[in-house]
Image 1 (cartoon, rainbow over the protein chains, first blue to last red):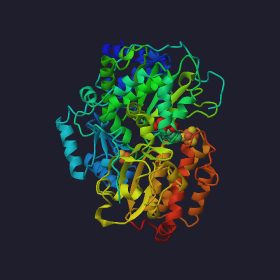
Image 2 (cartoon, chains in turn red, yellow):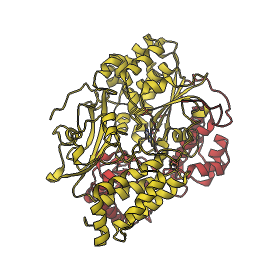
Image 3 (cartoon, each protein chain N blue to C red):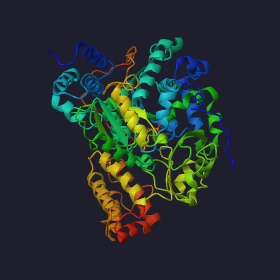
Image 4 (cartoon, rainbow over the protein chains, first blue to last red):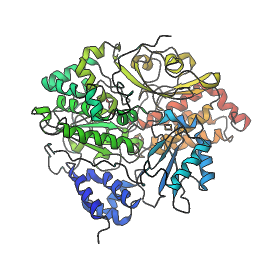
Length: 199
Length: 434
Ligand SMILES: Cc1cc2nc3c(=O)[nH]c(=O)nc-3n(C[C@H](O)[C@H](O)[C@H](O)COP(=O)(O)O)c2cc1C
Ligand code: SF4
Ligand code: FES
């Protein structure tokens, strides 16, 4: 039995078809697998490897480079609090301490009910609304301790279900393959192809 | 102070709630630039961009027209859009991809036409979930509208555009790391030479990499002509530019400002822009172009926002972000936080960057925590010197990419400007700011 669902596999094949070389679909496929499972299960990694023509070890070695790809389970909601410079200047450290206390986990941890993973993040490019928080990569700016608690309450009760899709869901719009007008060059051995020139 | 009212080049639709839709875009002149471009030759379009003096908005400020002219001739070439926007305190592309995705798509197709590429990729940082959705939706609509794909608007020009999500790694904003990432690999920057993207880029083919904001200017430039763009601003710094203002200001946000005609003081204090520092506090320091840039002090407030002007004063406009720190800010803590960022995000290929960032972070942390020693200041500068010999500006580079040499910027600035504050931390055994 395949681990990735029929639907996920079909979407994965479509994504692979978007690129001149199938390895390029590696990260998008990891996102898809996370959309299904919440994290990158070993079984999913095996199937991704087959789809992009690599070994599972190669997929894993690539995935671990990227902060958004999780090789261990995470909570239903990934709460990322930015503490980088613009947010630091506007109270992000206090907000993070508050979040740790109110959720009962240190940054990096997951609540025992599996609901929330708390993460200290680098700049999420929303600095005008510091201190900035993302929940499953949806933006919530200008939070205070109180509005943070309200946010957590709303997430818990499901009131924000429409605004914050499940963990791993990046693009709710169908990814259009276009018409493939490009002149695909076939298999290129590696990116170290041609001779050097001056630029 | 005078705030000039420039034409709004990339922010003209922001007043509309539905600025991201095709309907709004078409009702406000959308895709007219592309239609016009298709009546010109690709060379004519490129010439307009060259005449515009459009400097790249991603950080390095390289003229777009010149970059395009360096693309090696080959049967297959690519255009890659850099929407990784991860330089701390930079948040302008975020706005552009969420609020005006069609403008970006139109810019991409215009550039593809001028360059003669048949395949473009828009690489957006994975954290832009809504941005990814909006750009993908815009692209799907643009395909249906005939603005992307085969035989665009009845012409014989065709191009495919693919939106590609990143997955959280600052270094993937560096153009060769971005290309590696787009090939499905770890984001390790490539050695230049030989890997200049214009020569050996994506899949080994010649590739132009341009920033989101750079390309978002193209519809206006083609519609109004390169000389109309060049008439704004001054000298090489033509047109308008987005500035992302954050930190201790009343009105943080993204502002479109005519280059050179506006100063840091205007941006921070003008009532229609930053509106000043809250609580009537004094300005302590400014980080002018992303955290890779050396800091400025109050004495630089009257410096114009122009690329060459800021470079001559010893820093850079970089990614177009300005962080304001008031007099309550701890300089040690600010430098430490920026350094910790670089330490976390170093890709680890080069020893000076990987190890140096870690040591610098530890030393700064112990000073901030009150366990520092007086000779830690020399140690910091020595470690900075090991990463970038001479700790000069622009920095010397001994590493594969410029992330490494960017690390000393904030540390050297903080020590040069606030040496006494570092010493006070050591003497008092803790942070005087509490
Ligand atoms: C460490 C590092 C991070 C970078 N991050 C970005 C980025 O997030 N977005 C961007 O457009 N350029 C970034 N750049 C600059 C790119 O390498 C490249 O110069 C730029 O995308 C070219 O586009 P432009 O000429 O239109 O500015 C970064 C460079 C370095 C060294
Ligand atoms: S300078 Fe740093 S980030 Fe750049 S390639 Fe070297 S180790 Fe990687
Ligand atoms: S510094 Fe926090 S979002 Fe940019």
